[in-house]
Amino acid sequence: MVTAEVPVLALAAEYFFKMGVEGKRFRPMVLLLMSTALMTTPAHGLQDLIFDDLRLRQQRIAEITEMIHVASLLHDDVLDHADTRRGISSLNSMMGNKLAVLAGDFLLARASVALASLRNTEVVELLSKVLEHLVTGEIMQLSSEPKDMSNMDYYMQKTFYKTASLMANSCKAIAVLGGQPEEVALHAFDYGRHLGLAYQLVDDALDYTGTTKTLGKPALSDLGQVI
Ligand code: FPP
Ligand code: MG
View 1: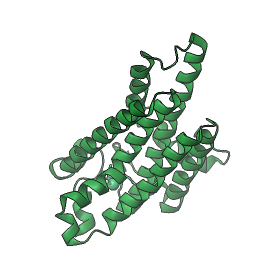
View 2 (view 1 turned 180 degrees about the vertical axis):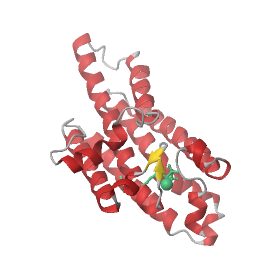
View 3 (view 1 turned 135 degrees about the vertical axis):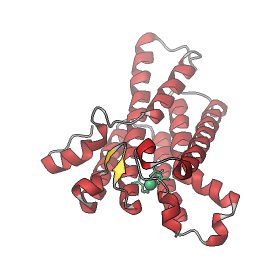
């Protein structure tokens, strides 16, 4: 899904999907576990064949989520002027800002096609909302005023948009695709939201306590943005 026709774009788009720099794949793992957790209590007594098909469709959500995540990192590294990511040179420092931005756009375009192919408008709506939230969160971070930076509500809202929305909405999408009732879908959303908020709280703390070597990406970059 990430291979491109034009060699230079292929190189850029595949950059963070290569073995060794593919990252923890935390989001897809959580989503597949969510799929498994919901499979143990199938909503409509699904048969094996339908079961396999559903698993493949949910796996597609996991793939789309990872593509959106990597696209957002490519753009984020341009905004942060980061020179490293996952222990190697960032794509912007390797190939320049223009190509890094376009590679992110390309991943988003491929993710959109994959999303549409699921033919489920509620799921399309959930993941499209995530794109809006990612941009909103990033803008809130970029344009925060001194009074916002000491406001916990502002910080948590920004963190939801920037990180937790992707996990919350993709967990919900797994439940929706599985034909689970609204109540279960909302629990899946809350699970992803809490996990996402916790994840970003730790990531932000590490930005101050970690080093570029242990993090594999620049330390103190968030602090750098506000100075
Ligand atoms: C990493 O944050 C960045 C994000 C979680 C979101 C970035 C979103 C955008 C750049 C908006 C554009 C969105 C898309 C879908 C293209 P961080 O800088 O705190 O983490 P880091 O330390 O890993 O860089
Ligand atoms: Mg960053």
